Image (cartoon, rainbow, N blue to C red; front, side, top):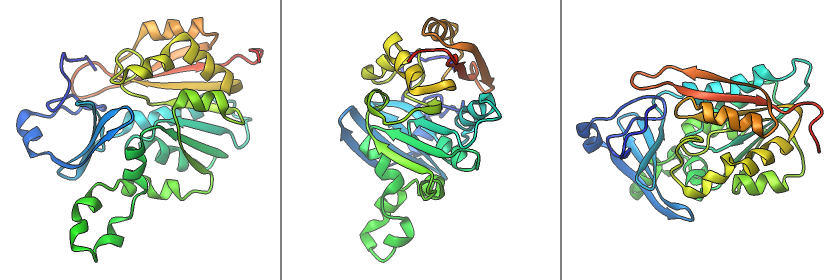
Length: 266
C-alpha cells in the first residue's frame, strides 16, 4: 500500500483496511507500554484489535490474508521431499502467521521470535475467562490475543523466543528450512530505525546463512518492491519472485520469496 505522510490514527491497515477519523474516535486503548524500542499500544475497535508502534499503525485482526500467505507461500516453495521442515517466523504480531504455521502438520519445528515484551504478554497473559472473578480485571482481559494464538502456542512444535531477530539469526543452534519475516512494515518503510538492518545486505546474509541449502526466505511487505528483489539477488538468493495480495484501497500487499542455492556457503 502507498505510504501516507503520516500513518497513524486514520491509517491504512496492514491488510488494506482504512480507518476514518470517526472510526479512530471509537477505538479503545486497552494497553499502552513504553518498551525497549519505543511505545506500543493495543487498541480495540469493535470486535478487532490493532497494534500501534510509536504512533504508527502496524496491523490489526480484521483480515490476515497476507500474513497467512507468508507461511503458505514459503511451504509451497519448499522441496516437496523435505520431511518435517523447520520454520522461523520473525514477528509474532497479532498471531496470524503463527496460527497458519501451526495449522499445517507438515512443519516439524516452528520457532517464533518476537522482541517486544508487551506483544508477547498480549498473547500469553492470563486468559480472559480466568480473570472473570476479579471485578477489576476487565481491561486486562480485553487486551489478551490468545483467541488468535492460544491453540498454536500450545502446539508442542512451537517455541516462542523473546529476542531481537538479528541476534537470534546469529546465535540459533540450528538452521531453518524456511524463514518468514513480518517485521515492521516491510523493507521500504520501517517504523523502528533499528529494523533497517534486517533488510540491509548484512541482515539478508544472516537470513541466508541461517537457512538450510535450498531453504526459502519469505518477507512480508506493505507494497511490492523491485529494489528489494534486486537486494535479494545481490545477497545470493535465487528464484526471487513476488506474490501480491489485493487490498480494498491502494497498491497490493506483497510477499517476497527467495531461495538459498544448494551450494551456498557455509
